[in-house]
Amino acid sequence: MQLVVLAVLYAVSVLPGTLALQLPRKAGGMSEPPWEQAQDYLKRFYPSDSKSRDPNSLEVELKQMQKFFRLPITGTLSSHIIEIMQKPRCGVPDVAEYSLFPDRPKWTSKVVTYRIVSYTRDLPHVIVNQLVAKAFNMWSKEIPLSFKRVSWGIADIMIGFARGAHGDPNPFDGPGNTLAHAFAPGPGLGGDAHFDEDERWTDGSSIGINFLYVATHELGHSLGLDHSSDPNAVMYPTYEEGDSKNFKLAQDDINGIQKLYGNIYDFHISNISLRHCLLWVGLNEKGWERGIYLEKHTGTFISKSLLRGEI
Image (cartoon, rainbow, N blue to C red; front, top):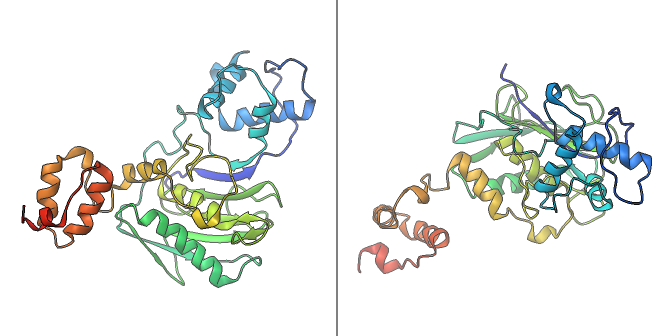
């Protein structure tokens, strides 16, 4: 069975540290639990080759974290870094050298099926169905893939809510820690997305974890995306609450998903001249719609007359 990688969305819990190595402390010292938490965080999300670990490896990992989050690279632990470490986030490592999906797996079919096998008690079934469809639609608007919901059988992407141990190697751990996890495209568990039923899920109208936000992020992993260091991106590692009405993919998300699947018109503007694009558009019955797309992505005004060949 093809090896798939688990993306775990969770808030970093304060666990006893097992590393004996010390990080450079910021002046004034730091209480022991955050200190242990920092070492555990770096071990989880900025892993290094254990064979080559040396007394300075944790400082190197801390610098990698600072670089990823676009912070001053000092190698020094601070309260601001601890604050970042305490935010709910996805469990996929962030270091650029660590390839989450080394073979860049993606779905090869133009129609990807999904099935919601179980629901949360926090939201009506119809709302969950609508939010999942909305999350898929955010991605499908940018790529030549469509998503079809099925009601029975095995789908490409199986979606469900569960508590504790639920049939994969990573059991959920109750409210406030692990929120959800998803797998990269592939057979078996590949593409599947699981959500912790012990969380308080909401549609954005009440206090709790916004299901649309988490689902859109996790389905990004289900489609093959890893993390972005752009804080505005849906694929940014940490969970952030925002305005549900204005929630959308950032340009960085769009660039990433189109790198895997191409754009919605299944060709790459960067690899073709604008003149050839216009010739191609003029021959297509949806020329005007595609012309708008070219205008958006090239900054070139394209008139209806030009597309009709009148000028």
